Length: 382
Image (cartoon, rainbow, N blue to C red):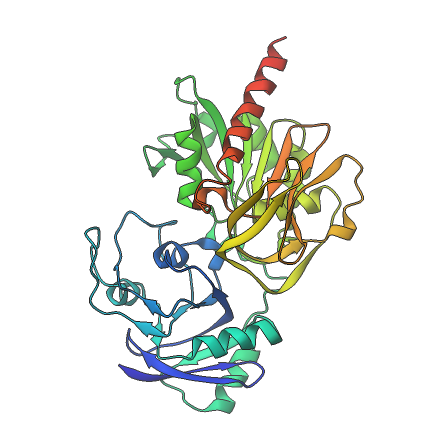
Protein backbone atom coordinates (compact mmCIF):
# COMPACT_ATOMS: atom_id res chain seq x y z
CA UNK A 1 0.00 0.00 0.00
CA UNK A 2 1.13 3.56 -0.69
CA UNK A 3 0.33 6.84 0.96
CA UNK A 4 -2.63 8.74 -0.50
CA UNK A 5 -3.94 12.24 0.17
CA UNK A 6 -7.46 13.53 -0.36
CA UNK A 7 -7.72 17.33 -0.46
CA UNK A 8 -11.10 19.06 -0.64
CA UNK A 9 -11.53 22.33 -2.50
CA UNK A 10 -11.90 24.19 0.81
CA UNK A 11 -8.44 23.01 1.85
CA UNK A 12 -9.39 20.16 4.20
CA UNK A 13 -6.87 17.30 4.07
CA UNK A 14 -7.48 13.59 4.76
CA UNK A 15 -4.68 11.04 4.61
CA UNK A 16 -4.95 7.33 3.89
CA UNK A 17 -3.41 4.44 1.96
CA UNK A 18 -4.24 3.24 -1.53
CA UNK A 19 -5.05 -0.49 -1.61
CA UNK A 20 -5.24 -0.46 -5.41
CA UNK A 21 -1.86 1.10 -6.26
CA UNK A 22 -0.74 4.36 -7.78
CA UNK A 23 -3.58 6.80 -8.54
CA UNK A 24 -4.72 10.35 -9.11
CA UNK A 25 -8.25 11.60 -9.80
CA UNK A 26 -10.70 14.41 -9.10
CA UNK A 27 -14.43 14.46 -8.47
CA UNK A 28 -17.19 15.43 -6.07
CA UNK A 29 -16.89 13.71 -2.68
CA UNK A 30 -20.13 12.29 -1.26
CA UNK A 31 -20.98 9.72 1.41
CA UNK A 32 -23.23 6.66 1.51
CA UNK A 33 -24.69 5.33 4.77
CA UNK A 34 -25.41 1.75 3.59
CA UNK A 35 -23.87 -1.10 5.57
CA UNK A 36 -23.64 -3.39 2.53
CA UNK A 37 -24.06 -3.20 -1.24
CA UNK A 38 -20.74 -1.60 -2.13
CA UNK A 39 -20.62 -3.39 -5.48
CA UNK A 40 -24.05 -2.08 -6.44
CA UNK A 41 -22.91 1.40 -5.37
CA UNK A 42 -19.72 1.17 -7.42
CA UNK A 43 -21.63 0.25 -10.60
CA UNK A 44 -24.57 2.65 -10.16
CA UNK A 45 -24.37 5.21 -13.03
CA UNK A 46 -25.88 7.86 -10.72
CA UNK A 47 -22.41 8.06 -9.07
CA UNK A 48 -20.69 9.11 -12.30
CA UNK A 49 -18.19 11.87 -11.50
CA UNK A 50 -18.14 11.21 -7.75
CA UNK A 51 -15.81 9.76 -5.13
CA UNK A 52 -17.88 7.77 -2.64
CA UNK A 53 -17.14 7.60 1.07
CA UNK A 54 -18.64 4.60 2.87
CA UNK A 55 -19.68 5.44 6.43
CA UNK A 56 -19.75 1.77 7.44
CA UNK A 57 -16.17 1.14 8.63
CA UNK A 58 -15.35 -2.33 7.24
CA UNK A 59 -15.61 -2.75 3.46
CA UNK A 60 -14.60 -5.67 1.22
CA UNK A 61 -15.31 -8.53 3.63
CA UNK A 62 -17.71 -10.38 1.28
CA UNK A 63 -15.75 -9.71 -1.91
CA UNK A 64 -17.42 -9.20 -5.26
CA UNK A 65 -19.28 -11.33 -7.80
CA UNK A 66 -20.28 -10.70 -11.38
CA UNK A 67 -24.03 -10.88 -10.79
CA UNK A 68 -24.51 -7.99 -8.35
CA UNK A 69 -23.77 -5.21 -10.82
CA UNK A 70 -26.03 -2.32 -11.81
CA UNK A 71 -24.31 -1.45 -15.10
CA UNK A 72 -21.59 -2.67 -17.43
CA UNK A 73 -18.73 -1.02 -15.51
CA UNK A 74 -17.65 0.72 -12.32
CA UNK A 75 -18.98 4.28 -12.42
CA UNK A 76 -17.43 6.00 -9.36
CA UNK A 77 -14.19 8.00 -9.52
CA UNK A 78 -12.87 6.47 -6.28
CA UNK A 79 -13.94 4.44 -3.24
CA UNK A 80 -12.98 5.88 0.16
CA UNK A 81 -13.20 3.63 3.25
CA UNK A 82 -12.02 3.38 6.83
CA UNK A 83 -10.81 -0.21 6.71
CA UNK A 84 -10.45 -2.49 3.68
CA UNK A 85 -10.75 -6.25 4.24
CA UNK A 86 -8.45 -8.01 1.78
CA UNK A 87 -9.57 -11.61 2.46
CA UNK A 88 -13.25 -11.93 1.48
CA UNK A 89 -15.36 -14.74 2.92
CA UNK A 90 -18.67 -15.41 1.18
CA UNK A 91 -19.96 -18.38 -0.80
CA UNK A 92 -20.88 -16.09 -3.71
CA UNK A 93 -17.55 -14.27 -3.83
CA UNK A 94 -15.65 -14.44 -7.13
CA UNK A 95 -12.79 -12.15 -6.23
CA UNK A 96 -11.54 -9.35 -4.02
CA UNK A 97 -12.76 -5.78 -4.08
CA UNK A 98 -9.19 -4.55 -4.63
CA UNK A 99 -8.71 -6.64 -7.78
CA UNK A 100 -12.13 -5.55 -9.06
CA UNK A 101 -11.25 -1.86 -8.64
CA UNK A 102 -7.73 -2.34 -9.97
CA UNK A 103 -8.96 -4.02 -13.16
CA UNK A 104 -11.05 -0.94 -13.93
CA UNK A 105 -8.36 1.54 -12.90
CA UNK A 106 -10.48 2.93 -10.06
CA UNK A 107 -8.69 4.04 -6.87
CA UNK A 108 -9.53 2.47 -3.54
CA UNK A 109 -8.24 4.23 -0.43
CA UNK A 110 -8.41 3.02 3.18
CA UNK A 111 -7.24 4.42 6.49
CA UNK A 112 -9.20 7.65 6.03
CA UNK A 113 -11.04 9.12 8.98
CA UNK A 114 -14.39 8.60 7.26
CA UNK A 115 -16.33 9.90 10.29
CA UNK A 116 -14.49 13.22 10.13
CA UNK A 117 -14.84 13.36 6.34
CA UNK A 118 -18.58 12.65 6.50
CA UNK A 119 -19.09 15.23 9.23
CA UNK A 120 -17.15 17.78 7.20
CA UNK A 121 -19.39 17.17 4.17
CA UNK A 122 -22.55 17.37 6.31
CA UNK A 123 -21.45 20.73 7.71
CA UNK A 124 -19.89 22.27 4.58
CA UNK A 125 -21.75 20.38 1.84
CA UNK A 126 -20.60 17.98 -0.87
CA UNK A 127 -17.64 19.48 -2.69
CA UNK A 128 -14.97 18.79 -5.25
CA UNK A 129 -11.72 17.15 -4.27
CA UNK A 130 -8.46 15.76 -5.62
CA UNK A 131 -7.04 12.37 -4.63
CA UNK A 132 -3.46 11.35 -5.33
CA UNK A 133 -0.61 9.03 -4.44
CA UNK A 134 1.74 10.89 -6.81
CA UNK A 135 1.24 14.53 -5.91
CA UNK A 136 1.31 14.93 -2.12
CA UNK A 137 1.47 18.72 -2.12
CA UNK A 138 -1.62 20.21 -0.47
CA UNK A 139 -1.64 23.48 -2.41
CA UNK A 140 -1.21 21.70 -5.72
CA UNK A 141 -4.11 19.34 -4.97
CA UNK A 142 -6.37 22.22 -3.87
CA UNK A 143 -5.86 23.80 -7.29
CA UNK A 144 -6.64 20.51 -9.04
CA UNK A 145 -9.81 20.15 -6.97
CA UNK A 146 -10.98 23.68 -7.73
CA UNK A 147 -10.46 23.21 -11.47
CA UNK A 148 -12.44 19.95 -11.54
CA UNK A 149 -15.86 20.14 -13.29
CA UNK A 150 -18.70 21.46 -11.12
CA UNK A 151 -21.83 19.30 -10.78
CA UNK A 152 -24.07 22.35 -11.13
CA UNK A 153 -24.98 22.73 -14.79
CA UNK A 154 -23.10 19.56 -15.77
CA UNK A 155 -24.73 17.04 -18.13
CA UNK A 156 -23.37 13.66 -17.04
CA UNK A 157 -26.16 11.68 -18.71
CA UNK A 158 -24.28 11.73 -22.00
CA UNK A 159 -21.44 9.81 -20.30
CA UNK A 160 -23.60 6.93 -19.04
CA UNK A 161 -26.51 6.50 -21.47
CA UNK A 162 -26.42 3.60 -23.91
CA UNK A 163 -24.94 4.42 -27.31
CA UNK A 164 -27.63 2.56 -29.26
CA UNK A 165 -31.01 0.94 -28.49
CA UNK A 166 -30.76 -2.33 -26.58
CA UNK A 167 -33.25 -5.02 -25.59
CA UNK A 168 -33.36 -6.29 -22.01
CA UNK A 169 -33.91 -10.03 -22.20
CA UNK A 170 -33.52 -12.75 -19.57
CA UNK A 171 -31.49 -10.56 -17.24
CA UNK A 172 -29.07 -9.01 -19.71
CA UNK A 173 -28.68 -6.36 -22.37
CA UNK A 174 -29.00 -7.70 -25.92
CA UNK A 175 -28.18 -5.78 -29.09
CA UNK A 176 -31.02 -5.31 -31.55
CA UNK A 177 -30.81 -7.67 -34.50
CA UNK A 178 -31.88 -4.84 -36.78
CA UNK A 179 -32.02 -1.07 -36.55
CA UNK A 180 -34.62 0.73 -34.47
CA UNK A 181 -36.65 1.57 -37.57
CA UNK A 182 -37.13 -2.16 -38.21
CA UNK A 183 -37.64 -3.17 -34.59
CA UNK A 184 -40.65 -5.40 -33.86
CA UNK A 185 -41.79 -6.13 -30.32
CA UNK A 186 -41.64 -9.81 -29.29
CA UNK A 187 -45.06 -11.45 -29.57
CA UNK A 188 -45.19 -12.43 -25.92
CA UNK A 189 -48.37 -10.68 -24.80
CA UNK A 190 -46.35 -8.85 -22.15
CA UNK A 191 -46.36 -5.10 -21.55
CA UNK A 192 -44.13 -3.20 -23.98
CA UNK A 193 -42.00 -0.64 -22.13
CA UNK A 194 -39.70 1.96 -23.68
CA UNK A 195 -37.07 2.86 -21.07
CA UNK A 196 -35.20 6.11 -21.62
CA UNK A 197 -31.71 5.52 -20.32
CA UNK A 198 -30.27 8.40 -18.30
CA UNK A 199 -28.04 5.93 -16.40
CA UNK A 200 -30.42 3.04 -15.78
CA UNK A 201 -29.71 0.43 -13.12
CA UNK A 202 -30.00 -3.22 -14.12
CA UNK A 203 -32.18 -4.04 -11.14
CA UNK A 204 -34.84 -1.65 -12.44
CA UNK A 205 -34.87 -3.64 -15.66
CA UNK A 206 -35.01 -6.90 -13.71
CA UNK A 207 -37.96 -5.53 -11.72
CA UNK A 208 -39.86 -4.57 -14.87
CA UNK A 209 -39.13 -7.92 -16.52
CA UNK A 210 -40.26 -9.77 -13.40
CA UNK A 211 -43.60 -7.96 -13.57
CA UNK A 212 -44.41 -8.97 -17.11
CA UNK A 213 -42.68 -6.32 -19.21
CA UNK A 214 -40.63 -6.53 -22.39
CA UNK A 215 -38.21 -3.60 -22.23
CA UNK A 216 -36.31 -1.75 -24.93
CA UNK A 217 -33.60 0.55 -23.51
CA UNK A 218 -33.20 3.75 -25.50
CA UNK A 219 -30.44 6.40 -25.58
CA UNK A 220 -31.32 9.55 -23.65
CA UNK A 221 -30.90 11.78 -26.71
CA UNK A 222 -33.30 9.79 -28.90
CA UNK A 223 -36.00 12.04 -30.37
CA UNK A 224 -39.48 11.74 -28.88
CA UNK A 225 -40.90 10.95 -32.33
CA UNK A 226 -38.77 7.79 -32.47
CA UNK A 227 -40.02 6.76 -29.03
CA UNK A 228 -43.62 7.33 -30.08
CA UNK A 229 -43.15 5.32 -33.29
CA UNK A 230 -42.31 2.25 -31.19
CA UNK A 231 -45.90 2.31 -29.86
CA UNK A 232 -44.99 1.11 -26.36
CA UNK A 233 -47.57 0.44 -23.68
CA UNK A 234 -45.61 2.60 -21.26
CA UNK A 235 -42.59 4.89 -20.98
CA UNK A 236 -40.08 4.57 -18.17
CA UNK A 237 -37.69 7.40 -17.22
CA UNK A 238 -34.59 6.12 -15.47
CA UNK A 239 -32.25 7.26 -12.74
CA UNK A 240 -28.98 8.95 -13.63
CA UNK A 241 -26.24 11.40 -12.57
CA UNK A 242 -25.74 15.12 -12.54
CA UNK A 243 -27.87 18.24 -12.74
CA UNK A 244 -31.35 17.60 -14.23
CA UNK A 245 -31.65 21.19 -15.44
CA UNK A 246 -28.61 20.58 -17.69
CA UNK A 247 -30.31 17.76 -19.62
CA UNK A 248 -32.48 20.01 -21.78
CA UNK A 249 -32.98 17.48 -24.59
CA UNK A 250 -34.46 14.98 -22.13
CA UNK A 251 -36.82 17.59 -20.67
CA UNK A 252 -38.10 18.56 -24.12
CA UNK A 253 -38.66 14.91 -25.05
CA UNK A 254 -40.60 14.29 -21.83
CA UNK A 255 -42.77 17.35 -22.42
CA UNK A 256 -43.67 15.99 -25.86
CA UNK A 257 -44.43 12.47 -24.57
CA UNK A 258 -46.42 13.36 -21.44
CA UNK A 259 -49.99 12.09 -21.69
CA UNK A 260 -49.42 9.95 -24.78
CA UNK A 261 -48.59 6.83 -22.81
CA UNK A 262 -48.42 5.88 -19.11
CA UNK A 263 -45.17 7.25 -17.69
CA UNK A 264 -43.12 6.30 -14.61
CA UNK A 265 -39.94 8.08 -13.50
CA UNK A 266 -37.36 7.19 -10.84
CA UNK A 267 -34.68 9.49 -9.34
CA UNK A 268 -33.30 11.67 -12.17
CA UNK A 269 -36.34 10.63 -14.21
CA UNK A 270 -38.51 12.04 -11.40
CA UNK A 271 -36.58 15.33 -11.38
CA UNK A 272 -36.90 15.63 -15.17
CA UNK A 273 -40.66 15.02 -14.89
CA UNK A 274 -40.84 17.77 -12.29
CA UNK A 275 -39.11 20.26 -14.59
CA UNK A 276 -41.25 19.18 -17.55
CA UNK A 277 -44.35 19.90 -15.44
CA UNK A 278 -43.16 23.40 -14.59
CA UNK A 279 -41.18 22.93 -11.37
CA UNK A 280 -37.58 23.87 -10.61
CA UNK A 281 -34.79 21.77 -9.09
CA UNK A 282 -32.01 22.62 -6.67
CA UNK A 283 -28.84 21.01 -5.33
CA UNK A 284 -29.07 19.51 -1.85
CA UNK A 285 -26.33 20.40 0.62
CA UNK A 286 -24.96 16.86 0.83
CA UNK A 287 -27.58 14.73 -0.92
CA UNK A 288 -29.47 11.61 0.08
CA UNK A 289 -27.36 8.47 -0.32
CA UNK A 290 -28.10 5.30 1.62
CA UNK A 291 -30.63 2.55 2.27
CA UNK A 292 -32.36 4.07 5.29
CA UNK A 293 -34.23 7.19 4.15
CA UNK A 294 -37.74 7.41 5.69
CA UNK A 295 -40.43 8.53 3.26
CA UNK A 296 -44.12 9.16 3.99
CA UNK A 297 -46.73 8.11 1.45
CA UNK A 298 -49.25 10.96 1.65
CA UNK A 299 -51.98 8.83 0.03
CA UNK A 300 -52.19 6.22 2.78
CA UNK A 301 -50.04 7.63 5.59
CA UNK A 302 -47.61 4.71 5.52
CA UNK A 303 -43.88 5.16 6.12
CA UNK A 304 -41.50 3.54 3.64
CA UNK A 305 -37.82 2.91 4.35
CA UNK A 306 -36.17 3.73 1.05
CA UNK A 307 -32.88 3.49 -0.79
CA UNK A 308 -31.71 6.75 -2.34
CA UNK A 309 -28.84 8.21 -4.32
CA UNK A 310 -29.24 11.78 -5.51
CA UNK A 311 -27.79 15.23 -5.05
CA UNK A 312 -30.56 17.29 -6.66
CA UNK A 313 -34.22 17.66 -5.73
CA UNK A 314 -37.50 19.07 -7.05
CA UNK A 315 -38.27 22.40 -5.37
CA UNK A 316 -41.56 22.10 -3.48
CA UNK A 317 -42.39 25.82 -3.66
CA UNK A 318 -42.17 25.79 -7.47
CA UNK A 319 -44.86 23.11 -7.90
CA UNK A 320 -47.58 25.45 -9.15
CA UNK A 321 -49.27 23.07 -11.60
CA UNK A 322 -52.79 22.42 -10.19
CA UNK A 323 -52.89 19.04 -11.94
CA UNK A 324 -49.81 17.76 -10.08
CA UNK A 325 -49.98 16.38 -6.54
CA UNK A 326 -47.23 15.72 -4.03
CA UNK A 327 -47.48 12.00 -3.25
CA UNK A 328 -44.45 11.36 -0.99
CA UNK A 329 -42.21 13.45 1.28
CA UNK A 330 -38.87 12.80 2.96
CA UNK A 331 -39.32 12.69 6.74
CA UNK A 332 -35.76 13.81 7.44
CA UNK A 333 -35.90 17.15 5.63
CA UNK A 334 -39.39 17.46 4.12
CA UNK A 335 -38.19 17.38 0.51
CA UNK A 336 -40.22 16.10 -2.44
CA UNK A 337 -40.10 12.30 -2.85
CA UNK A 338 -42.98 11.65 -5.23
CA UNK A 339 -45.32 13.30 -7.73
CA UNK A 340 -48.53 12.12 -9.35
CA UNK A 341 -50.64 13.70 -12.09
CA UNK A 342 -54.38 13.96 -11.44
CA UNK A 343 -55.52 13.82 -15.06
CA UNK A 344 -53.09 11.65 -17.01
CA UNK A 345 -51.29 8.36 -16.23
CA UNK A 346 -48.02 9.73 -14.87
CA UNK A 347 -46.19 9.37 -11.56
CA UNK A 348 -42.62 9.54 -10.32
CA UNK A 349 -40.57 8.95 -7.18
CA UNK A 350 -37.21 10.26 -6.02
CA UNK A 351 -36.14 7.01 -4.36
CA UNK A 352 -35.24 3.54 -5.68
CA UNK A 353 -38.00 0.92 -5.24
CA UNK A 354 -35.91 -1.69 -7.08
CA UNK A 355 -33.15 -1.58 -4.43
CA UNK A 356 -35.29 -3.58 -1.95
CA UNK A 357 -35.14 -1.23 1.02
CA UNK A 358 -37.46 -2.04 3.85
CA UNK A 359 -37.02 -4.69 2.18
CA UNK A 360 -40.18 -4.53 0.05
CA UNK A 361 -41.78 -1.26 1.16
CA UNK A 362 -41.73 0.32 -2.31
CA UNK A 363 -42.17 -2.68 -4.63
CA UNK A 364 -45.83 -1.73 -5.17
CA UNK A 365 -44.73 1.10 -7.49
CA UNK A 366 -43.88 -1.34 -10.27
CA UNK A 367 -47.30 -2.95 -9.89
CA UNK A 368 -48.83 0.54 -10.07
CA UNK A 369 -47.05 1.10 -13.39
CA UNK A 370 -48.21 -2.20 -14.91
CA UNK A 371 -51.79 -1.59 -13.72
CA UNK A 372 -51.63 1.88 -15.25
CA UNK A 373 -50.58 0.36 -18.58
CA UNK A 374 -53.37 -2.23 -18.41
CA UNK A 375 -56.05 0.37 -17.73
CA UNK A 376 -54.70 2.62 -20.49
CA UNK A 377 -54.82 -0.25 -23.01
CA UNK A 378 -58.35 -1.20 -21.94
CA UNK A 379 -59.49 2.40 -22.37
CA UNK A 380 -57.99 2.56 -25.86
CA UNK A 381 -59.86 -0.59 -26.90
CA UNK A 382 -63.25 0.88 -25.99
